[in-house]
Image (cartoon, rainbow, N blue to C red; front, side):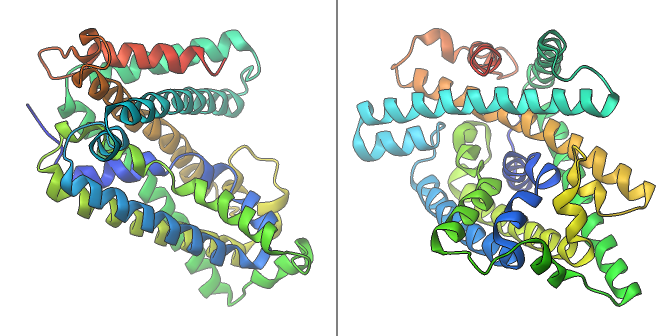
Length: 338
């Protein structure tokens, strides 16, 4: 059976972390922290890095699937492990449903469709789930290809924005970074407000905790996960801080006041960059759905493997795909967020 190699694990980690937020609403943190936003993202990335190293260290000694479930079981026993596993499964399933809803609504808004019509949205979610199911059903080989391509699409979009921004700043010789002081009053920013901004920024780095859920489908997880997770956090942190700094130097006012669904498109006037950012956001949202479809069902499967859930949940087809766990997760993901 095909298993994910080191670089595929790195790309899976990136895909699980980078969702729609950095494309759709980076102005939220800017509106809270103003000129201190890059520092806020740096601190958030540092906290994420510490947690990532903790998960990486745990993965070195516990190479079973289920990530937090497996680690909690090893440290505190099966009862605590079961609670952690089920809680993470439910939270992850709800998050998947929310992300599926987000990508469907965004597509409907961009295409001029009825984004608030529950029938259209539900139909879109079901179609998305069928697509994701078809990608996963033949095992990790096709999933690995699609996951790697979608992650590459995210990174290319982010990299293009950063490079285009640098070219714009260098060619014009102008920086509008401190214009943010006229838009966001940070003179009254206290420690509480600063911490809230860090928490909001930290949300952009969540997702790495689910990477090791499918460690049984990875090559040498005890060796690759401890290296892959921190490396992915480093790549994402560098990209996010660079992106936020660049767009604040180009046009902070547009970032804060735009009504565009994908707010980053308001920064540049080039139609080419507009399309790159727009489709990059869609690829990003689709990609995180793909990555989540790999990790969350394997959490449920891992609990069943320990005999704490019916054996029905640990069934795999001939391609090594946890079919029943996937179907159960998809049902929860569709129904609970409604």
